[in-house]
Image (cartoon, rainbow, N blue to C red; front, side, top):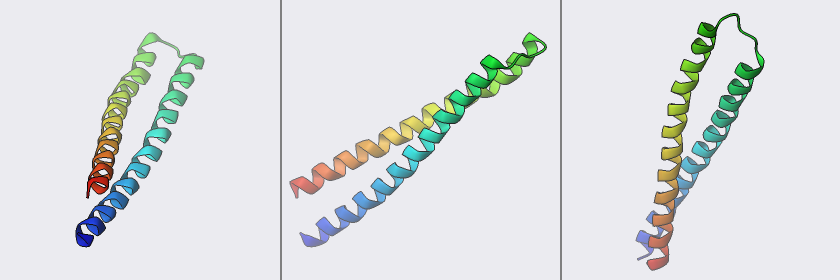
Length: 89
């Protein structure tokens, strides 16, 4: 019984570490995304084509943010499952 609890505790610490790392990355990525959006809104570009050159990478970055948010959510789910498993043992 004690061995199972120790293994669950190790797994919880590992998932908490991954969760913290993904939270920090997600926060900085959202900040960078909104900074880029504000930059595009306030910079006067010479042609509409130039705006497309700025918006295409932003769209790709937004997709990247979506996948990062999914990873963060999966870490949260796994942590919740491990904690409920620990409480049931």
